[in-house]
Image (cartoon, rainbow, N blue to C red; front, side):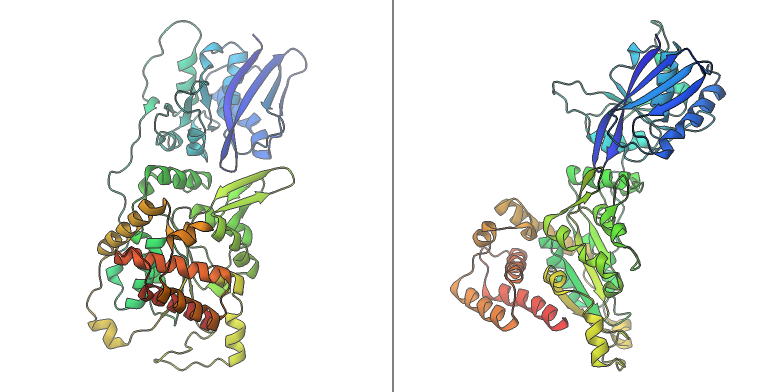
Length: 512
């Protein structure tokens, strides 16, 4: 038989679309043609596959006209993931392995010139894309390189096999009725992750800063975004780096989402399974680096921070276009990247934590050093953050610098574990009441879940009128007040809760 079909998958955004690798051998002038909208790295598979087959002692049909089609033809294909299915297709078409035994399997893997299999990006996305058990279509078995197979096996009920070498795969599909021999290189994978995730940094390491720690607790309990402003060395970065430890433990679904995106970006590690990600891009990062892009589109920092924290230090130093690109994802929790040829959507439900100095020299309002900036310099510096972006940040807190005596003699603060317990209890109240975090409330749900008594409503109306808040600002204040009430264990939002929420919006208004 001169025609063979091998199944694989191509990545487009978070989707792993089925790809059929069709291989045909014909008489004629010897050639090796690869078609099907393949990127350069896919076309280079011709040389890798040829060398891998020859160096493993198998026969490469070099006297034939070889045509490889990656169907469907209008779906972009990139990376070296198609090396293994192309090699198997050639071997099947030349009769060296049994085509019928390949049915029910999907293959992906990059080949070295010696035939070893190398890991690929997006193995977890491939496994998540397989049909669920009980569906009309049978769930295929995945054959992947070591490392990639460990990722894919994290998906419940996925049947994943690890192979280290091309020969490990070939021996499983030889012609005839013989049972394949057991080999170390071919193994059925089972989920294997550490039972206790890697520990987070402890908030007790940060001395003082009670107001900032309170803001972190509120942000973690309600899923709110946070902006910290203070002098250099006041502890803003230390606080932000410990914020992820305050968030509740990840569910299996959240861990799979986070791990799948990390796998697409080539950043996944089993040691980080179920650990809330914290992405801290440098302030020179472009808009594409933050939100994603490229051809085909790849996730940016906001998607890699999905279900975790996006920490932007020196916030005003980021390019304005990059900061403005955050506005829609902060509202929707997703980012859609549209190009002329294709469109991809990535999840981006992250918590933004920003840090900035109050002025170019950093010491405006400091009791330790005098500020040397003019009012115009301060205004231009703070003006780098647009009003619409600041309006989407729920909490704003000033982080004051500590004196030497306070820094040396201050007692240790409350540990991360203690604060996380209160955060988890507040989150449980919100989920039990409305099925989502307070930050995710929209439309009528805000009116229903954030009802105020007469005194609280009058207080909020007065504050909003004096500070010139937008409708979005009022709604965000209501959601923060609801979170403060949940932390206090209160059923209704009271004046004290609203007053504390207004303080954070007041500081934001004053800074702008």
